[in-house]
Amino acid sequence: MNLFYDNFEKVNCVTQIKDIRDNYYSFEQTVFYGEKGGQLDDKGTINDLPVTDLKWVGPTLYHQVKGNLTNPIIMKVDPITRYINTTVQSVFHLLDGYYAHQNCRIIEVNADPNNEWYEINKDSITAEQLDDVETWMNNIIKQDINTKFTYVPSQDYPDPFYRKYDQVRLVSFGNINTQPCGTLHVNHTSQIQSFVILGSKSKAHKTKIFFATNLVVNKCLKHDHKIIKDISHVLNTNENDLVNKSQNIIAKNKELKKQTKLWKEKYMQYRAYEISLSKNFLVSIKIDSPTEISQVAPYILKYIKHSKIIVANLKMKTYFAVISKSEQAQDILNYLKTKIKINGGGSTKIVTGDTSVSIQDFNTLCNTYLSNLLKDNNKI
Image (cartoon, rainbow, N blue to C red; front, side, top):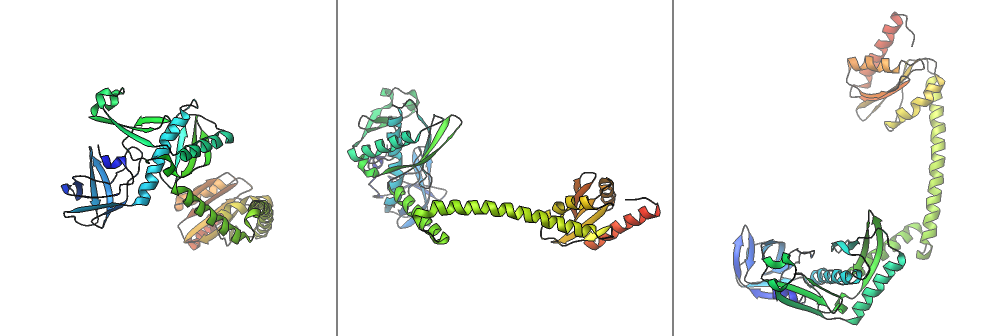
């Protein structure tokens, strides 16, 4: 067991190199903690070189740094990262104790300071229950309960899982919770400082509860405060009126979308009528997006008596629609597919598609089709 882990505030030590493997170092002793048991990696330096990776090889922690190391080894763990990583681990132990009396249990946790959460095996939870766990946790913090570390022979511990170890390390927070754990923990609960429930999300017989603790609370507060200030500035309103202003903007946006849709339909109808007036079988149009072809085609169908092809060029591609009142759209498409490679499909009355063939070559092909029909006295 690494006794340095019994005091999370111990963030410095002087030691010697023990082994080197693939540019990773192990030492006679280490104050660093590598990700394991739900606790994240420490950050820091060794001989003033940044530690870039930590990995366990069995019970031994190996360290990688930016550069080469020589004795003596001076380790310095970043105290802020250590503090944040340690407090959340202690919170999980305390929450285990809380939920043991709530007829449920924690089934999964996440200690990432950018997204701290835990899941319980209940598919719903009330706002009052969330308030209760927050109040309970902050009362435990105020009580400043000491953390106790006890080492017992593995054969004396009832769980056979731990028989593979020489010793079992028990972490106790008063009579709230005692469990085997090898991670770092606060020395007393007041070091957790604060605990805030941020929200919850229920699904499939479990509920995920989002929270912030210790210095992460400060980070969340600053982050959210900045967002509120920025939004207030953009919307030109004070913070207290943000909700009303946002709701008004959403309502106006919905109305604008409705009006835009109506005007777009009217525009498409006008454009379709204009296209239908052309006596040409093939009509070239301008488009800003490929969807315009498929949007205007149904309106054209309402106005025309004979088949018509609309075609447009956009970004080195030729887009088209075949509109046929006499239900020959698929026949025309099949003819085109025998001549060139085309992506597209549709019904007997409207087909749309695109091709890499130039618009000039596509137009020539369509006009050839029309000429052949006229020679055979066929009508389209």
